[in-house]
Amino acid sequence: MSEPRPSLARSTPFRLALTFAFLFVLAFILSGAIVYQLMSNDLARRLDESIKETYSVVAVTYAKNDQEDLIATINDHVQLDTDKDQLFSLTDQNGNRLAGNFTASDLPDGFSMFAVRLPGVPPDTMYRAYTGEVGDNNLTVAFSMSETQELETIVLMSFGWGTLFITGLAIAGGALLASRVQRRLDGIASTMVDVSHGRLDARIPLIGNGDDIDAVSAQVNAALDRLSALVDGMREVSANIAHDLKTPLNRLQMILESAADKTVSGEDVSAELTDARTESQQINSTFDALLRIAQIEAGARKARFVDLDVGPVVETIGDVYADVAEDDGKSLSTMIVPDTECYIHGDRDLLMQMLANLVENALRHCPPGTAIELSANREGSHVLIHVRDNGPGIPAEEREKVFRRLYRLDASRTTPGSGLGLSLVKAVADLHGAAIVLEDRNPGLGVTVSFPAVKPA
Image 1 (spheres, one colour):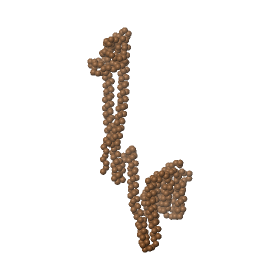
Image 2: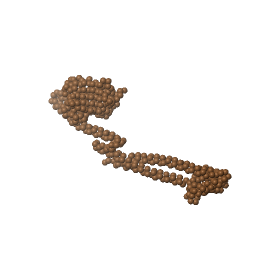
Image 3: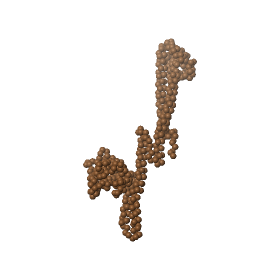
Image 4: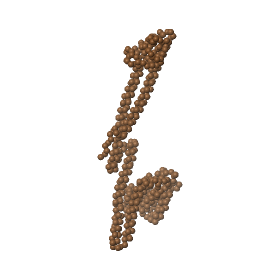
């Protein structure tokens, strides 16, 4: 049974979406507060400018010892403003009103704010006033702040509704996006549950948009492909071991039984013991090769990697096996491109083992008269090692199979060997990040191992 799917509210994508929504709304509120404060300050500044301008227009009508024009101007302004959005007050030194539609009392000089109760004016209406001396009198001009306050209220209400709308939209959008991400994460979890239950062919579905989840899913799928291949390889190895080692073990058993029978009758068993030792050595060498491949695939030898030139390695293998090939009726030639730096990062001993296996494989399976070529060169950012021959080659449908452990072609089952030589070659190449290509030479086989090149130290 698969584990229960977590609720959307508890899912990581939804929580991340909520966090993003909260930060977005918080940024909106802070920016709105700043805009509101700037707007409020600008409205207050404009109101003060209007009040001061009106005050100046009224005060300029005063002439020394002649205040009739001043009083007339104030009364004209009062008659024009029946809604009392503007208030005017002209008082003498004793506080007696000389003109205007209200009496200003105890207002300081300059700008101030006050609330006044007047007929036709809503209670607690705030006014912004400017007070100053005009001759021996005090003149006060006040503008109602109701329009400014109404505009600020409209802005605040709009901002509040906008905040609610954005919050709802952010939460809904976050939930929608989180649900989509959660479905993809559920697909990953479901695939891993299937894999844990033994379905190694299960893979994470990809959308194909190239986002980070797709990239991670592709990497997980690649790891699952590798895991599936390793498991299949282990199954195949187990089957091959049971099949290929059964014959030598049976032979060993028959030899030992024959030796036992001869011992009872007092006959010489030295020949049987020699055969038994040969069979046991062959079995031990097979298991040693399997263990060596396992160690290489585990990456234990990477600690010994250094930057080295493969040219001398190729020449060493060529020198060692040239006489062997000649004794076997074949030829082995070695070629290194002059003045070419073929440096890679690797293990010299493993590379020599790999090349030795490739050359031995060609010597073992090619008839007399075969010409074998061993060469190394550099092409761009890769160092290439080639082992070519003009022998019988390998059928196209068998080329991928020959790298499997204990796998042997039908034509080679009668020849000595364990079927692990090319498996070790593949393990060494994989450890070095190299690619192996088998090609048909018509006739013959060409093996190319491509290593990433490095600059010499």
